[in-house]
Length: 152
Ligand SMILES: [Zn+2]
Image 1 (tube, helix red, strand yellow):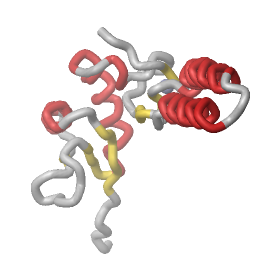
Image 2: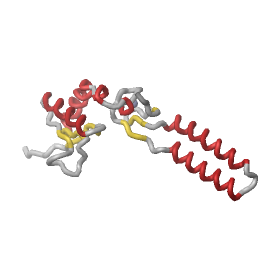
Image 3: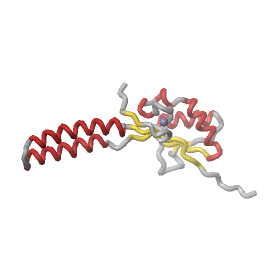
Image 4: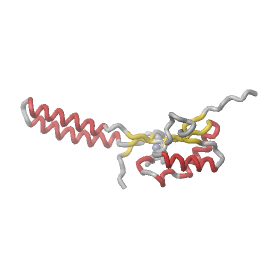
């Protein structure tokens, strides 16, 4: 039988290289040929963890038990399903605020009535707060939950 090279899958993208290294060692201790994207695998991030496809399920289990959560930022763990596959949301609220404030300043300078600028300014701040709650600062790639940045 021909030896077909196995596909490798990206298991996780971790918050930093040290955590990725720790997770890699943990998996290797359990007999899984995991590797991070450094060294031989140039061009891949050293925060990303790879395994051959046939090890994926087992590796995920070990990684869950390994509990990356205790070593890292609580924002990088989904509060609903505890997945660590999360991504930062685009700064929608900041963009809305800036756009609203810019529009308010333009109205205040060049248009009448002036109070319209003040209303727009207040509206932009309120809209940004509402949008931020809906969009969140972080999103889980597993279950789709969103949350705001938690500060410890
Ligand atoms: Zn989730």
